[in-house]
Length: 243
Length: 230
Image (cartoon, chains in turn cyan, green):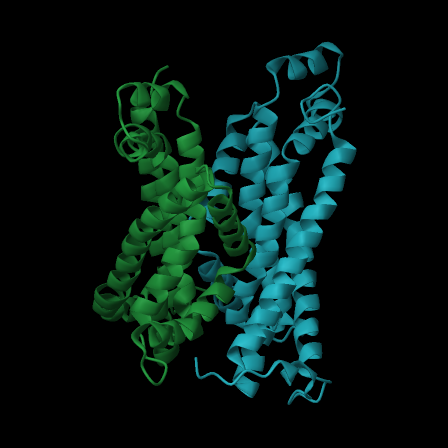
């Protein structure tokens, strides 16, 4: 391979004048994590509400949950980001659209919200599966104790369901972080974006992408380890995973 | 709001969108699903084989692919494939591989990791008695896999495999980052040329949504039909 390797490139000053190339990548990493975490908060809250709606004894709520999930699951994430970023400001009243377009950090907010809603459909499906995997007796026992539906969910069904679906939720969290890379298309300079611009400035393709790869692997390792601890901490006594 | 919505832009772009864009998208989806299935099955067999090293290599590959964002993998292969081609052919400079070949290799390699996990689950869902009975009949390991285990594993996993293909169909839109004219790429080129972002992106969304919806509806019907009553 007649490629000119130069691993020292990371310590050469970047053309932005913000330190060296490594600083560029690390600022991308920070943005990746910020976008990922904000998107995850949105996904978790919205997804939980929709997931619960899909298990409620109300036809209307079931139907809404079904439609919500199908809507957000059957469009590519990239198309959804384009809809949020390019189409939404045009469909709003003029003043609101203008305000949206001039928002500072628009790509960051768009990406977080877009990825958040995209992932919320997946969270909803997981939570629905978690709730319906509980024995029917749990809901009946809650009713027998005189708990209202809200109390039943709040004190019995949700604490159980969330603990059961913790492992798949971990993968969804990792997917959320990985999906932030799609935001490169609306100009968000997260980790992949910074690796791409480093490659364009320095022509060191493989060094730039290797560094980004290593950083993604590190993030993965940290998240997986942290979740292992969390899983052990919240394990349900009496279940296979519990003490 | 929708008062100056220009349907004519969409109508004029239809041949370009579908003949160029959608053909590319569907070809990429189909071939990548096929290639991903073949490689994925091979990786699944490696992981389940008795040779520890082989299993470990397959495991590392799957974990590696699954921890990277697809966009980064697309960039990796886009820049790497010319060098691999040069190395394989012994050419003096990196050979240029077309957009289609480069994105096809990317998606086959990437999807193989996902398909392999599905096939692994499928193979593990076959009861122990089946390979035991196959050995009792005198079938070799290869024959057991080919005639007994894999057909059943494939059948059990068919709905999941198709669901993954729907995800793949949506993910091919990410070749946008290489300025390739897939369906979304075509829509976006028209959108930028005519300054009609709203129409083109909404139309692209509707088309992706309709196709994926019909496909997932089909999966649900299929699931009900092929369910084996045990």
